[in-house]
Amino acid sequence: MAETEYERKRRAETTPEPPGAEVSGDVDPLTAPAGERFVIQQHHATALHHDVRLEMFNGSIPVLVSWAVPKRLPRERGRKSLAIRTEDHPIEYLDFSGDIPEGNYGAGDVRIFDTGTYEIVDRNEERLTVRLEGDRQQGVWHLVHTGEQDGRDQWLAILSEESRSPPEPRPDPNPMLATSGGEPFNDPDWAFEPKWDGVRAIAICDGGSTTLISRNGKDITVAYPELHRLHQQIAALDSMVDGEIVAFEEGTPSFQLLQRRMHVRDPAQVERLSRQIPVTFFAFDLLYLDEGDLTSASYQDRRERLEAVLVPSGFVQISPATLGEGVALYEAAAEQRLEGVVAKRLGSTYVPGERSRDWIKIKTKDDADVVIVGWSEGSGNRVGTIGSLVMALYDDGELRYVGQVGTGFTQDTLAETLGRLKEMGEGEAPFGPDMLRSATELRKVRWIPPRLVATVEYRQVTSAGRLRAPSFKGLRTDKRPDQCTIDQLLT
Image (cartoon, rainbow, N blue to C red):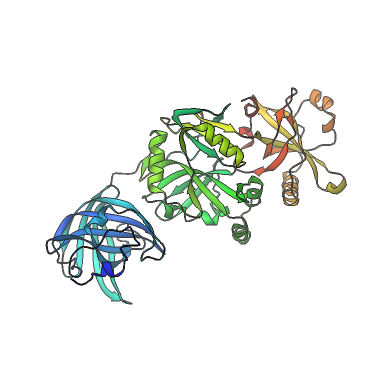
């Protein structure tokens, strides 16, 4: 029997796809006997598309009659999506999910987007109407044959009716927070993830767009154009993904490098910086999937679903997790100069905006997010710019002085931070007269309103409550000043 179109396009020894069926030619979907099953695969090939496949019969042999749909099956009544008729696939393709290696036809990652049963509602010489009953797609669609163009057999997919249940409300995009812990530990009831030194963000993804929300509820999407296609890497109708935006310098996360991008909103400058300082989104939790709220599900369940639907790429990765073995991961994190690890209880739910003992951060180095309340001018080669920044933390609603930081700056961060300080205008000293008399280093400080937040590293906390040997890492806009509390130093 002659090779089928499916077999002509593939080399069995180099692709994991199933071998072709022993059939002669492709069937006509407008007349072929119908089966019952269907599959939709999300195909990350040269161009992202969905492959819609319906079981039909070529004689007595079941095959999958297939269409490539570049913009997915439409979910709005009346909207039309182009569908290109492709070669029939063997019925074994119902279960195929995997990576087609480079050099092969259709090279790229294939994920099952949906599977289930279907029935033909109606068909004639130019239109096929089917009802899909899948996990994600539920409703009636028309497939209308419009003829050949540029050598392609073209159809239109049109939604007639959708029968999915109404969507659940999305949870608040306010990230769950970890409690500071002590020593690393091993425990089979916990998972351990690297702690990334970046900007926390929740990605709200639907079928056509991605919105990035920072920890303090701001839309930061415009700052990271390379992440605008994040929704395309998720095989789902929609989702909310919790993660960290990270920039790397020589293979190590660099918050200071990332700071050069955090505050930029001018489109031309954003585009230039995205090429100079590319970022990666490390996904570690899934809060919403296919119009359903997952926050009451266990961490283990959410994590398994995340790994099932997210397709890693150059700009989005799944943050690795190790079950039970926290000590080894901590040692590896310290060796690789990462911030530390986060331990997460396998059975824990996700509580937006809450700091929970079900998540514990164990740091390889001490750092803190502090409120900048003033600054002093430098001397020597720092004349005309910043000498040091005055740091404070909230303690029962009042700002407490925790020292000054004058190291860790680069020329770029000095210039940017000085600009932000001058934008703040003048403020008043937030400390009482006793503190101002005893802390002589504060006598020449220029006070500003307590609205800037910075991250600093330090060696220890002195008996007077000051940070010893602090080093400036960068300003951050994803955290409110009132979230910078003294308990960072007490745990």
